[in-house]
Structures are given as structure tokens and as C-alpha cells.
Length: 430
Ligand SMILES: Cc1ncc(COP(=O)(O)O)c(C=O)c1O
Image (tube, rainbow, N blue to C red; front, top):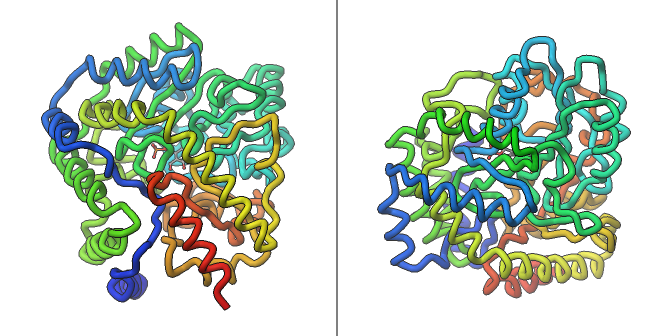
């Protein structure tokens, strides 16, 4: 209660601060006609819109095919269901993940096991995975964080050698590649998230991509029997889309924060979102897994229309951000200068020795509570033990987490320059 009040007070005090950069980019670019078309589909089933969205999304990744769900975690759950996972089976997750991934494993009745991160990529590490492998391991999840491909080739080789199903977690990484191979093509399947903080924003949503034709058929058959998100949730998501389109921009973001804080204070936070899977409980008021609503797929089409331009803008912004912080003496992960990788950044991320001082400087213009992976499992206030995590299990993640700095790269292109100038002013201030 006290922390909610404090948050509300801070948002009230700062709501006029312009610019203020968040980690969500509203759909400011949608025309009124496009918004109208999306609105017409709320609560409607339009299989054609879904199908063509899945096909276009899959083409961003490679030769495989994709099946959509109402969230990435639900696609992951569907995969585990098809693999017939249950009690006694182990699933290796990275010890810097979202609680919904652990929740999906708990739901299926299996045991999540956490492998430490690679401090260079903040993604999965083959050595850490090898250390926690057991005879019970049925699935390895290899995570690409912040848009940075993890060192996936040896992980894929290990999974192949052991005959273990490999899922690439591409929730935070869309379009990045290693030696020309796009992330998502290294494993048996890959999951993508398209929630509003992710590379491609459909408010909520996710897809499973696979090059295995038989697996695709089975996933599609499973999706066909999934329930729909309740009509009230779809309406709330639609209203949230309108709100974020208006306020999730740097000249309005203070208002967005104020509305969110007020909702949280009044106990109506998160109502539009699929937010009952953040804890360790395994029941929800909506179908799980649920299929993706058609109006969200329609937003996905508009996002894909712009994707090539979006990618270029994010890459250019990343270079400017790297230069800026390197000029200020920050040591950036070497992976950002690795020529074998193409990074389409979602965020610039690094662990800084001066994290507290940098946060102090950036606080006036950046929505810092959205920094990811300050602890090994994020998005839940429950003790990590509830998700099967033992303190000390992922020491690198525990050590680097509190020093994480995130800078958004999913900024509308017209605001990119202003972000760099504002950050420079904050870093230069005496
Ligand atoms: C690393 C990671 N994997 C998977 C997911 C699940 O995505 P979704 O929210 O679409 O279920 C998230 C969500 O934030 C995530 O951060």
C-alpha cells in the first residue's frame, strides 16, 4: 500500500515532465481508418486475418511456419503439452526470465530448473545448461535477451547430441541473426511474444514458429480447439490500445504513468492484460491456452508493414546509444561490436559498476521500474522459491541483475534523436 502510494505520488509530481521515455511504444502511427478496421474486429473471429498474420510473421523468421496464441507463454505451454510433459520431467529455463514461463512449466506439472546466464549476452549459456542437465531433462529453453542472440550454436549442438527438445525463447528478440541465420531457426521450435513491451507490439499475443511440418500441424490442431479471450477482456484490451496510442509517447508519457499508477492504486491495474499467470498459481479466469483475438492480429499486420523501417531505425539508434555511453566511460558488452551477429535491439542493456549513479541521472526522463532482470525471475512479487528457484542457483544472474541498465530502442523514429540528446544532457549534468 505504502509503495503504491509512493508510486502514485511520484507520478503526480512528475506527470508534466517532457520528454519522458517509456519502454512501451504506442501505436501512434495508425491512421483513423486503420484504428476503425481494428475496432470492427474486436470480439469477432476472422480466421483469414489470423492465418495471413501467421504466414507473414513466419516469413520474418525463415522457411518455417507459425501458429499464434493469446500470449507467448501459451504457445510454450501448447508445445509442452504436445511433447506430453508432466510430473517428473524437467524443463531448463534461464535464470533471468519472466515468471509466466515458470508458471507455464508448473501448469504442465513439470519442474522448472534454472541455468545461469552468459554475462556477455544476458542470454543462455551452454556451460550453465550443461551443469543442470539431468536424465529428467525433456526441454531446454535457450533465451535471446534484449534483441541480442545468445551463443546458440553450441546449445543447439548439445541439445542434438542429447536428443533433447530445444525451444528458442525469442520473446525479446525478433529478426536478430548469427552468421546470417535468424534467431528462431536453431532449435526444434521457437516462441515469440508480441505483448506491448516486445519487438512487435500487438498489446498481447505470441507465436510458436517451427520448421517441423508435423509439429506445425499438431500445433495448429491444438490452436483450433483453444478458447477465445472473454469479450470483456477483448474490450478492455481495445480501450488500452486507444489509451497507449494517445499517451505512450515521450510528450505524453507522464499522463500514461499517472493513469497506470492510479489504476494500480485503485486495484484495477492490468485488467486488460493476461495477468493471472504471473504468480505460481495455475488457474485463471480465461482459457489457457487461448487463441489470439483477430483484432490483435490485425494490429500485427500493421506492425509487420513497418517492420523493415522499424528494424533500421532501432539499429541506428543502438549505434548512437553505444557511442554515447562509451563516451561517458561505460564498458559496453563486446557482443554489440561482434560482426558475426546482427542485432535488432529491443533495448540497449548492460550491467554497470555505476548503476546507481546512472539511474539517478536518468530517472527524470526514463521509466526505470521497467528495467528487466534485476532478479532471476521477474514480473511476480512472490518469493522466487515458489517457482522452484533456489537462492544462489544462478550466481551471475543474481550479481549482474541489480546493476542492469536498460535504454529503450523501441522508440518512434521521430523521437530517437531527442532520446539521445536528453540522455546526453542527463549524463553531462553536473
Ligand atoms: C524472456 C521472456 N520469455 C517469454 C515471455 C512470455 O511472453 P508472453 O508475455 O507473451 O507470454 C516473456 C514475457 O515477458 C519474457 O520476458
